[in-house]
Length: 388
Image (cartoon, rainbow, N blue to C red; front, top):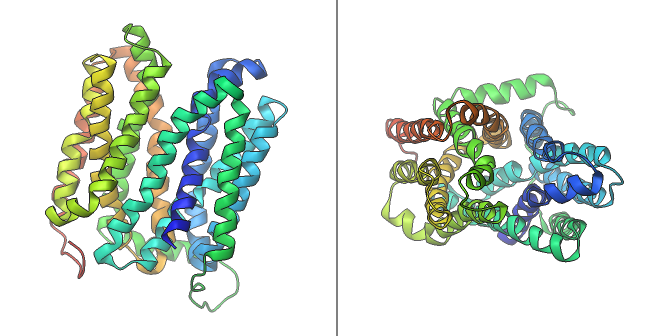
């Protein structure tokens, strides 16, 4: 069962990262400015975020596995449509649909895993699942560029189609999970969604969870799109070195996943949050100090490790916010995280234009401060049975 979940995470991650290194080639082939082609990223992030408040209640009402299977098949169709798109506007429209499709994969899968695994092993299971997403991040950022140069940018999109199709087939035929809870009416109503979210936010941990991950997206991933530009301005590298730095975040996350079982034996969850908050700004500090790209890559490995210490611990807390509305809870988590990612580059771009690299120290202060504050505030809550 874990293999199917991992395959789903890999499909979602590859669809997310596959177009980032290809923007320049897409712009050239469709004769549009690079800035216009870069809208492909926003065309994914915004529908991903804003579909969450809808997909979560649907999963809780009709069944998480049904939503997952439908979204996987839709994602495979979307990736095929992108590969065959005759012009940029068609591709951009299809990419918007892809954001909605992917929005029903990662959060729903984590909700399903939380249903299946008890609290004592839940964080370990989710951490292993996230390894697939991080592998997809590294794979998508590096292999896509190589394949684009050798056999054309559409070739990697076809590979994404194959992975998404494999995940859809595996989930359809082998993912057998209990049906949703019985309801006193046949179709979902607005009141069902409202009551579900009310139950989630009745838990005092909810705002702390969602506010922390929104800050992560706003500050850390608000700065990462500017790595290449900052390296070029300093004469320290090009898009290749920027790709290494971005991939290093995934490498750090994989290191976290490989050491997670050992880490869980050594640290309480709140300690993991505190250590993670202390480490995850390392890459931003190196970027602000204009460190050589080799040091920058190493710093972002540390960032990836620290990010996962904090982020995965928050995810484990989200699983317990409202067990009867778990899909909605994880959807709100993803909504918060991607909303931060959507607005972060806008805010960081303004800051860099007006204040230069010193603006990044503000990102560092906010990111580190919120992470440390969250770790201390979580200590005030009682620990549930089977958790740590």
